Image (tube, rainbow, N blue to C red; front, side, top):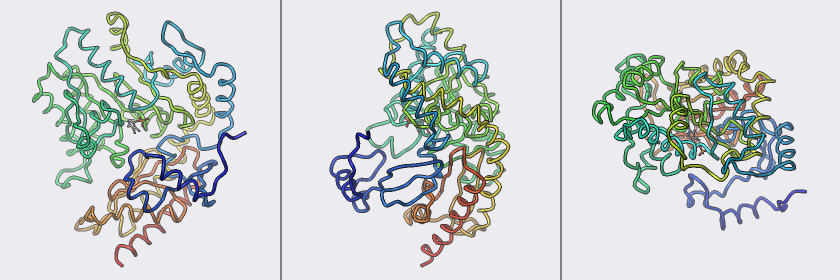
Length: 457
Ligand SMILES: *Cc1c(COP(=O)(O)O)cnc(C)c1O
């Protein structure tokens, strides 16, 4: 029996307005429009309280990779709740779900990863990494080595440490971030540059801002570099091919730890198990969250390489860090079922060989629309940018809010994608069928036509 009352849309909206503070939300704006109440979901579709059926082109928030309504995930949670709904992994305890999941994660990740530390979210995972990185260098006898390099416009979460690692100026402005010891360099965003360099030249130049920062800070003070293989919340910034090999070279040359933030790209999004596999990097840490449970329950964690884990185990004594919900048994059981489902249905291969190329080709054709200045997509993670004029390139004034106009037309026509400034971003569930991909593209084109009408009116 459901614990939730039956109420009308208006009743939900009223209670929501009166009692609920939303994440990343301008509440005055929200109260003018009222919240969209999502009541149920199935496959790749969500349904709102008015019964509207909307294709979820964002997999919730980049997480419902297996799609909605998967019985095996529901069963895994139910069974585990009956068996052992909670127990901690402190005080020399463990339980079967956390052990089994740890072993599975070792199997699907690169050979340097044999151990995992669990958290409840991506943000917590990145907080864990800040503490592990600094502890590692302390134990290595280099306590000066505490600075972590990140990138402008990066997103690594919302806790104090994770938001500091992130490179979002608006987030830093509220509440005095970043914390000391975190510095930022350029993002590899070719389309957003003046385009005077070729993409490959630009990728090298962006990577070399890391090297310049290492020299500025002092090579003996830099602990680590963190990056998302493809920047997600920042607008799906796909780096030029030259970028990651150069980042790896720089990390190797200066001996600094490489952190590949796999919270979005982990577990198949790019058509490989991890973004590090897609770009052939060899990271020392991989934070993950979102897709590990397909979002059915909150779970995060950090894959820790032997380079770091061996030192922590050997020298740290007790590492004074952990969360009540580190390795929550029900979340772990759902993650196991989710990874088995991804393996059984060969969803990673499907993105690599089938639905990935299929959607990418149609997505690229959106570039023929007069409003679309750039399209990009790897695996099932893409974006297009709305421009005023393509040649010569002329961008819309941000104040015009063209991205938001387009997003509203998309939703009104049954497709949920997000606007980041004037960039529309897309990350559909891995189970998207060809027919659903066709629907996604047709709706996007229709919304682009409507946006053009609104903008020129
Ligand atoms: C969403 C996200 C996070 C934060 O994860 P939460 O579970 O929201 O705390 C961290 N890194 C990346 C790349 C993300 O996209």
